[in-house]
Length: 394
Image (cartoon, rainbow, N blue to C red; front, top):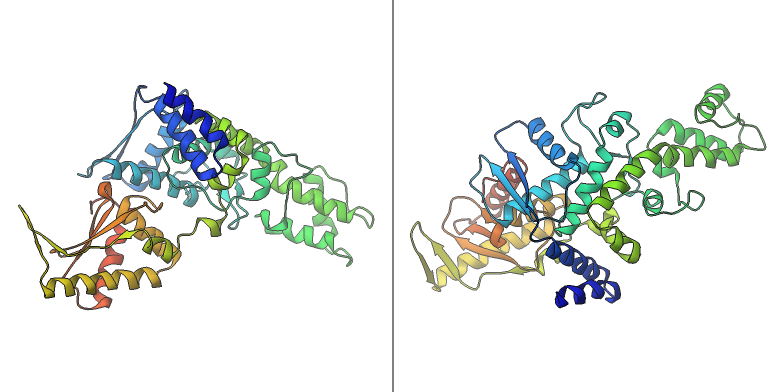
């Protein structure tokens, strides 16, 4: 009990916001370790829509203690352990950002956020609002943070400002926060000094937002009001739902007391990108070849084995150096189960036909038989792609 109290107070005073978030989360999870576990089970044999419905149904459940122990299972897959938990959390966050294959009435894919990177805002869809999808989003994001999972990057600073109690008057709204290009064009015309063309269309847009007709004296003010309405006022109910879901995960005391943790929870797109050097710095390279057979393991340091290790390890280093940010995230997800790099990521050179991963042990196993980078690259990319269709490489 004394240790818990020490951790509880330490997250307030520790200087590093990442450590503060980790200490707070660990304390919260530890204090609820004896609660009934949450079980998230997805059948990978079902189609994408059914799998997405399972995830959404899990997070739509009310009166859940989200700090309870989490147990995840992939039905139809032999994988078990913490790697499955990481994979599941990664899938949840990936779906939240890319869209759920569920038709709530207006589109085949339900996208909770819309707009361009670093200027994403909640969708103005009434169907998503009525189905409490923004509460679901808040629960997903908070739950992932508690378990040190992936974050949601690229939200509009104006939305984050309002989400955490900022006033509408001080919200840093920009034209790039508005995903509606018709509104963008109107705002741009009103900001200028040229004679307004398509006056009737502009007037109708202003009326639909409850704003007066434009004229020579009010056009600049009107452009600001249109933008604020499109970005903030039209998403106010969505933000309220979002905040509710986030609060239910237990993170609000941390975010209220430590505002410096907010950029970690909602990083900019560029800050969330994984770099080649970041991965290379965390790799534990093999010191010798480890040959794995069906029933036993032998170690051999002869010259040919060392040559194989160096060659295949070099191929991996080349792949990482040349990979795009998206490819790097796919590699990490294949390697350890989600896109968040581990402190140590192990590499093993083995006798095998194709690259595989043991996500529970954060270990990437690469076949020693590769003698051409092109073949190595082709096989690794093919195996990496399986982490989005199933977990079967583990």
